[in-house]
Image (tube, rainbow, N blue to C red):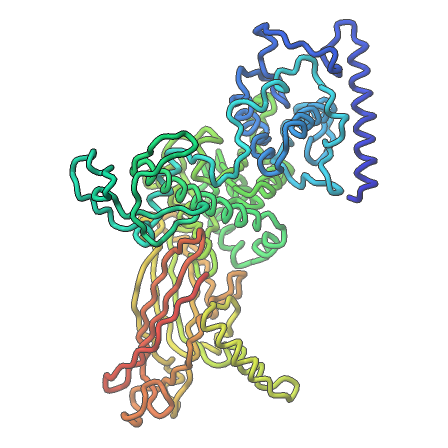
Length: 633
């Protein structure tokens, strides 16, 4: 929106506000709206101290309770909006009056959508999206410095209750969040061993350093990894001495806060990416994906009939709609993306499957789907759900190479907290496969002849980069040279979260049709893909396999290619070659590739490292190990 349109919108808002306030001011009983500063009543009577909700008729005795109510019932997080937008006191003051103005007109404060009734508005409310219009916020005009409601107690105290304008990194973490974060941090690389030389705690504070411990110092919030010895430090601001253990606790709290902030930033980016419609268009347009889930849900009627279903990461809500269509009695659709949770709710409502709105029991619909905006780990704070009360857990959690995005941990969390003993999980199995690919699986051949010109120098550079970074692409099954090996199989009904990290070994040999050929064949790398299964354990009537194999119809997951530093020559065991030459060369090709793969989560949230170690083995058992490669996803 350009600045002129923005001015027009503010002018329209002012005219509407004056119309609303003038009609109320003419009321013989005053009505309490549209007052000026001269009319402000700072009385101490108990009734005036009650804080009226910005959206409904609920009243609260503290801003903390009011804002918690606004978040849970109206998707309006005032403290978070203040922090994200950096609003000062007066800008926040204007925001409150602006929201009350919009609500009085049955208008969404955020997207300006109009509604006939207050109930319709309350059902529409969604988290803040696209707040800036034409370069400034629509409530910045001084029009909203005028209190909309007489004796609005909220305007007197919204800045209380410890609202902190400091950066989130320095904000204290909750005890449970800290405990969880601390267990995920490996301090071994940055915190030296604590060498207490005295058992007596009083000796640990000696000025001669005998009781000092080797710890990490924080410089501007960043750990000093030099491991300097720390004596007791003086807090000059408060003019007191802080013992070492207090300083160490503060340092670890700061590290935990930094880690929590990093995780939050990654989550915001991750869920924000799923707020774009293009990625959902790609996923819904994936017929292999959709037919598998649709078949598993709709073609197993005995499983879904009158079941309670939890959909983790519902996106557009398509799987929840399938579950409702299949006869589920309750469907809880969880989505952490603000934009998509709002859109999913509108989609579900438009298709007649939305259940009642929690803040308005009289608006109960015939539908069974409830869309909840949160991470599933925080579900119990947003909806009434008993532990182990869910019959079916459904989720499309798979990423590239199966484990990219590490959403599986959220699914396992939901399983352990909400799924009934013996309850169904869809899908319930997942398997990673691997095979070797040839030259045409790379871009080398393309660059060797570009309209008759040799551009192989680009091909070599691309190959060098591919030896460090995995490539997600569709590979033709004709470019697969070896047989297929199982890398790792998972049973989602029983596996533990730590099993997502593993090391495994397997062997690859030339496919039988290639073994019959004379000479050697060059293997340029390894390709990974996965299958997930909706097995007869839960889908008795219609078991289904969702495959991302290069031998089946392509999916949006494609396959993940890991290119070797140097190609390895392979042959069949019946051929004899020069045993004095290097293994894996054309003069001495290997008959098999012994492979060791490790997959582990990295310190960067939602990322994984994949290490690849390959060894060429000759027909007489000689072996040559190639340099290990580490790829990051």
